[in-house]
Length: 265
Image (cartoon, rainbow, N blue to C red; front, side, top):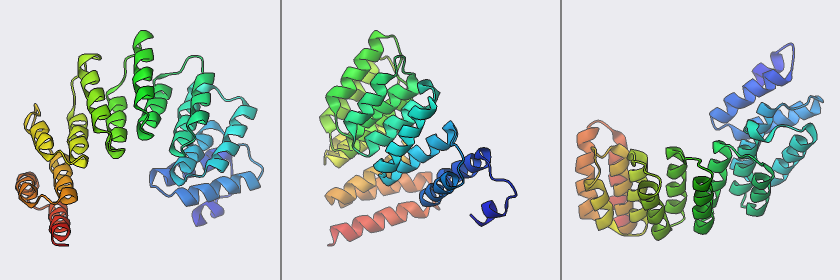
């Protein structure tokens, strides 16, 4: 803020550049303050500023301010396919305003892959399995190929929601219906799905069946599941495998310390 105040000229491009930097470093409150300063100076926000502030509102759960940004978008008639739609959908979904997110998505007559990704990931975060499945079917009918990142978001959303069966069905759909080869992030999400549900044997089986060497994320995910369910023996085994990959990493020792602390309480 001090550097910004010393600039001789305050224009929208300057605001946009600094806000993007703040958001990129998770400095959401200063970014929101900068947006208010832009408004106080009577400047019109461009689409980049608005996309930034929508991400801020999504993270902070500031739906009212997000709605004000939405009003600005409508007044300025920004194109729906410019990334604005996906940012709006993300904001409303993260604030649990699912109906509003769906309205925004439905207004776009030709949603791009970013918009599809936002609506599907949002439904996954909200645990709306049927909506995720229906969206994937519509995409298939329209011959729009889901991305690997999209399935990562789906699996992560179901994992955090504790929806094991739904997440596993989407994992199978990725392979069987969309002919996609799972990458490490997808398989790590699968390990997390089983781990959060307490199905540790299946989590280990998923690790062993990986077509490549499990990485640090794989083993740390399993250790965290062992902490959650108090399985010290399996946690030690995962720790040994993780240590071989990163002998000097302090993170593995922190995870094991948490595991021991949880078992002993």
